[in-house]
Length: 428
Ligand code: GDP
Ligand code: MN
Image (cartoon, rainbow, N blue to C red; front, side, top):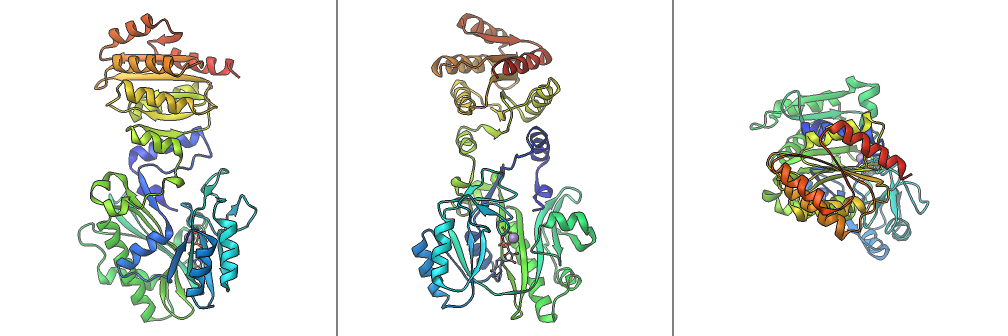
């Protein structure tokens, strides 16, 4: 997926930091991702052609759904929010999250091996993701597979349509090995894709005849319309196929939506499937905490994304490894701080906690109060390193001192980070 183009500067920076901290960092933030079978419905609402499909949540339902396709070739696809399903494998041993089948019995058998098991793909990391449903679709064998996506592009500061006639496979590989095979077309946000431009892209990709070129061009225009009207951050179709019977069809869809637009996209946001997200990240979001799990052993509680990144860098410079990224934001109060601690302590990896707050809007005495309450309520045994600066700093320091708890308090970031690293190392 070429999703990186669509990311906000904050997210890019955050992810870059997180990635250096943890190579297996995979989860999505700030964007809602919805299942393929739901995406197919949205595409159809926009008059975009897809193979006919039906979702099923049990092997029996899969059997019945398959019967509706009347013994023709079908494809059964694991509904897991990750790319690379075709080449993935299940923890049950089954190879592949996408299978071509002929009979309803095969549908039942494969659904039984997929549902309730985890699919591991190159995007999910080793843990994989639970498969709670499958989608059955008519097979429509492809004559050729293309790639098309609408994303936001930083350099043109607007949407772009990305297309390639080398679809089906990983687009990152195409981008790496054969960048000329990718056509990037900036789109005027208001005007959308005009007929001529859309048809020009289709002609460059090459289809069997003018009929398919026209269908492809119309598909591009409708994909952009969907992108704009639904506040999408990503509309990725891989493959967009010309079927052997001469139709242009979207055979896979990965749609992402801007979380900031949830208030005006209620219908779309109802489609969220929290089983596909990290449980701790979901819980954190409920309290307005921006939390991302990493692989290290120092839990960080910080306010502001910039300070969070600086904190992670300083820990790394001191030889440490952050266990997470947790931004309590500007509205931190004793309750949210306590919640943040609960989430940090739920991870067994955490060997020390580093609280680094620069209080501008937030009050550091509130943070201190939350830290103290949490330490008492949660019977905390891991060492706690605290650096509080800014608004109500004096009050905060007094609170910590008077609490009688074993909290290491610092003024300087570097000393505090060094202490956190040393304490974490000592716990091993
Ligand atoms: P992904 O691996 O998660 O991207 O899953 P896809 O839905 O793209 O499936 C992987 C491959 O399976 C595609 O590249 C196609 O070759 C094939 N495939 C997917 N959907 C269909 C379909 O509806 N009909 C047929 N014949 N093949 C399909
Ligand atoms: Mn695909």
